Image 1 (tube, one colour):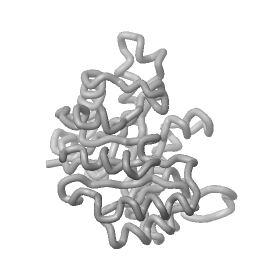
Image 2: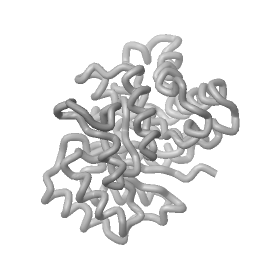
Image 3: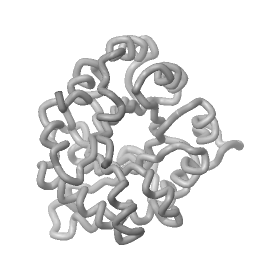
Image 4: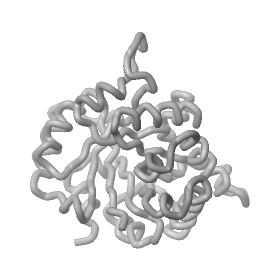
Length: 251
């Protein structure tokens, strides 16, 4: 049984004062982590505050990115080793904005994924599709390519703990969400791809999330789909009341 997983992605938003206020407002209001696991992906400047809060909360912490080396002369990058030592639980990799603005490739994501696993954290791999591809007959073939290439050389033992986020770029921050049937189709195909790469047992354990204009209005229907194990919420995760509505979708 895969535990539902809700991740809020703050991106490059909020201030430290706003983060403190956010965390105060969600205290004692999150679901039981055995029923619904919750996490916040935050900028590196907020991760110390977030990880300290998570020690006494069911909330989990996630970095929004990291480098593929533990240390060295890489000015401006974030060390996966340092994140692990800080107590960060998850690391998001390959978000469409990282691919678009910072030219990240599947090969880069693969190197980062291995670094995250070596440092005993769990990677959240994001895979995208563009509006142009989405309009073609074979658009779903594009979706699985980032999954296969990102998992290259990863053992089945490690792969079953990886989280995969399906995020069509045209739905991110636009207010336009993929239909429930489109979301289920994409997530099902991703799971089939994992089964082909490894086996059905591994595929049955991997959690697959949907991201793209998720809000408290569409989360419940999305979570009812067989292959949708959770959601990645962007804008809606910036306001504590909205975030709480999403994570408590089942109530």
